[in-house]
Length: 140
Picture 1 (cartoon, rainbow, N blue to C red):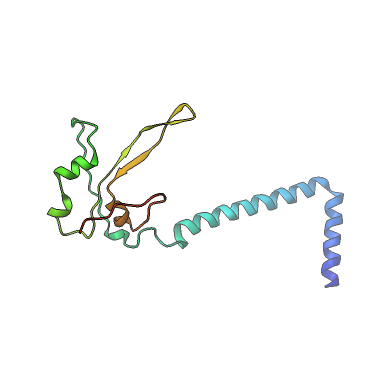
Picture 2 (cartoon, rainbow, N blue to C red; picture 1 turned 60 degrees about the vertical axis):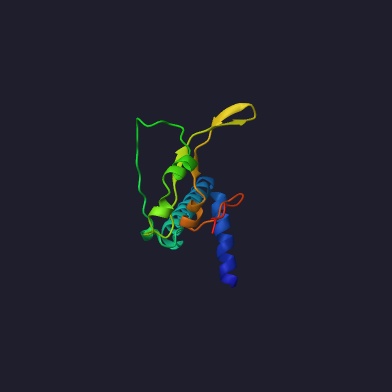
């Protein structure tokens, strides 16, 4: 134990004598620690954490685009015309969504906010809870 304390004191004295060497050591250690933290964060989020969706292999995304169609139609209107849950019984859950780009007034300045209009069944499909509020219940 005495040797360890003596070595630490000797290292501290040698770092005090060479200011340039001391700055290089501190800079090298800080860069190495930062790189290790970044690598761990990436590996943790990609490999170590379980998937957000329990059965992501079972999720199917179907998409249609109609460039000459009337814009501004709501998802509720589409659901009123096309009731996928009543026609198809192959899927456990079905949901519809579309990305919208509304302007939000923040402090008198309009800001664009990327958001999504979705049916309440999207939360059940992805097996997540909304951050704010609650979803609508399905009529039984």
